[in-house]
Image 1 (tube, rainbow, N blue to C red):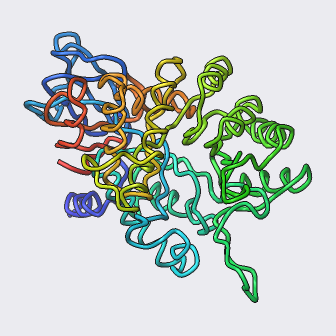
Image 2 (cartoon, rainbow, N blue to C red):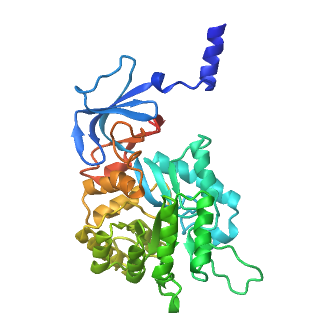
Image 3 (cartoon, rainbow, N blue to C red):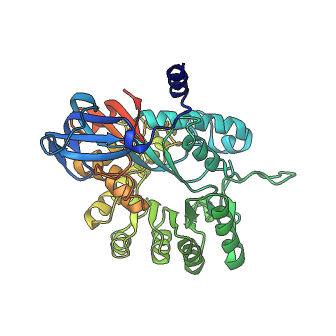
Length: 421
C-alpha cells in the first residue's frame, strides 16, 4: 500500500527528486560544438538541470544507471540564444505595427506571445533577449514568470519591459485623437524623468534597459538622434548601478556614436554604421546586433521579391554596414528582430549573416557563447561545460560548415528536460 501511494505521488510530480538522485542522461552525438569549436568523439552527461561532464567518451566516468540517448548523424550544441526578439509582436504583413498596438487587446497579445514562445523553443532557441513589449506594458515579465514556473513552454527570457523613447518621437502617431493614444514605449526626457523611468522599469522587472538613441522623427520622417549624450550617460549610469546593462536602438551614425560614448552594451540595427563608428564601438567594447532579417522582411512586405529586380537601398545599406562591422572586428551578436517576421523562423538571421559574409562557425559562436558573454550570462548559458544549465540542442548535419543545418532540429533540451525529440 505504501509503495502504491509513493508511485502515485511520483507520477503526479508531488515528490521532488533531489539533485543527488536525479536522472542522468548521456547524449551521444556524432560531434559536439561546445560554443567555440567542434569536437568529434565527445559525449555529454546531464544530471538534473546541469551539464555534469563533457568530453571524449573514454575520459568520462559514466554512471551505471545512466539513460543513453544516441543521436546518430547529429551535431550537439548549446541551446541557441536569440539576441533581439519581440514575443508580443507578429509579422507586419499580417497586421501592421500600429494596429497591433492600437487594436489588439493585451489579452490577445499575451495569447499570441505564449504561442510565439513555444515556437521559438521548438526551433532550438532556448533563450531570448526580448527587447520591448511595444505597448503591452510589463506583460513580458509575467510571460517570463509563467515559463519559469513551467506553466507554459518557452525559452529563458531576458526582458526589457517597455523601452524608453523621447517624447513625441515614437508611435503610434494618431492625429486628431480626442484622448491620449497608447504608445509603443515609455516617453521620458531630461534628468528627473529619465531617472524615474529607468528605476520604474527596473522596479517592474526589467532585466535590461532599452533606450532609443534615435528614431524617424526628423524632417520628412528622417532618422535623427533623440537623446543628448548626457541624457544617455544618465540612463547608463543609473542602470549600471543596479547591475544591469543598457541596449540602444540606433540606426544613424550619430545615434550610434552617442550611445557608444554613453557606455551602452549593444547597438541594435546600426543601418548607418560607418568605419569610424564601428572602430569606436570596438574600442569601447560595445557589441553590434545587426537585425539583418528584419530589414529584408520590411523590404519584402513592401513588394520586393528577393532574387529578382533591383535590391532595395535599405538592404544594400544593411549589407554595407554589416560588412564594415565584420572588417572592424567589432563583436557581433546574433539577433534578428523577430516579431517583424515569424517566431520560430529565428534561423533566418543566421542564414543572412552567412549570406552577407560571416563564416558558419563564427555565426554559431555569435548565437551561443558570444551572445551569452555579451548579455552577462556566460556563467550559466552558451557553452557546453560542467556546471552550466543543460540547455542543449541536436541538429542533423554540421552547422559549423553549413549554417542551414541549424534548421534540422532533432532534439531540444532545456534545463535538463527534453522538450522536443
